[in-house]
Length: 392
Image (cartoon, rainbow, N blue to C red; front, side, top):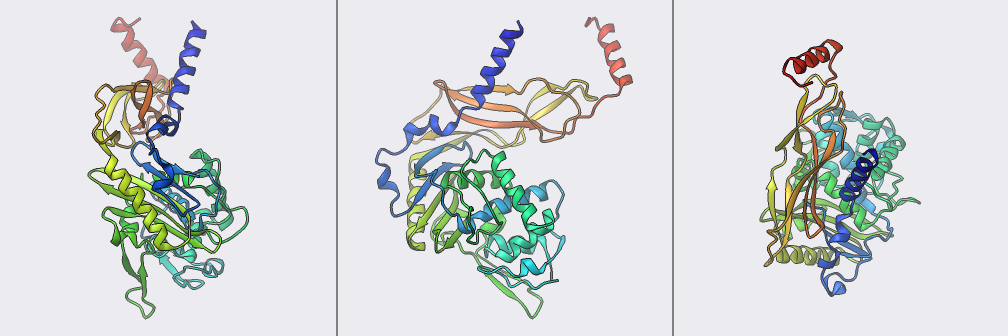
């Protein structure tokens, strides 16, 4: 019996671990070179399912330039979400942060600026000095923050990414891929407030001072392509012109990445072609909203006994236009034995949608609330209650 249970658990782990991208590879366009040209690498992803709609040299390791700041922003928003940081918190700028070259807002050593304003500087103006100032504030030093960046890359399963700074300024052994950038972008988009910053075309810093600074977004596609509301551009002489863009139309959000374009015009053109392909050929159907209670689960030795689990993100089904998939199945796959204490937001399983033995969608299920460990007296009373109800 134990052998049979072990086999079933192993099969479940293998099932939920199947890479969605490979399962959908056959749905990529037949003429792959016709969609994107004149760039070193590219990828197109539907954000809700993580499905890869198109790729070209997407695992080629290249300098990401300021697209590096997608990871920087991800760690900033994680700190905000964990209440280790607040938007109105003041950050004191170090000499090291103020010394950053390239794109900057000309921070001065000892200057105080709020997290909110520094976020504007990073997301809109790609400011290197603001990036380092926040990195130091969160982790204590730039090097400590970079360690967190690389650890987060491992957590996301990125095998072709390594960072040596939070800015993207040229340095040895600092690289990523179009594929890895799309995964980072998907993770960042979980924090929807990021779009309030990346969709802003212009803003001001130090507005009530004599050092007023005008921010203009480096992503010009905000004005040239309907639905684009982020995310991050990049350029160095070695990286050439890069862009991780996201756009949403008719409820479907896609992520497009281009690395190594010869000009900003060519970069934007290739991004637009991928977005056009996505919106012309695919559509999404939302099966469940984010935060919906899916079921109650039992947690061993918990004070609560049973607790609700919810969808971390919307459950989305991706369809090719003109084709319907009505024969899909929905499955709830739990990680197995749950034992108190556990924190709200802990991953406990997946809401999986399949058709023809292929995974169409795999959405994380998390605990809705904290689960507290029960004391011995509480457990004793529960046991007595079960016995008096004839449960033994």
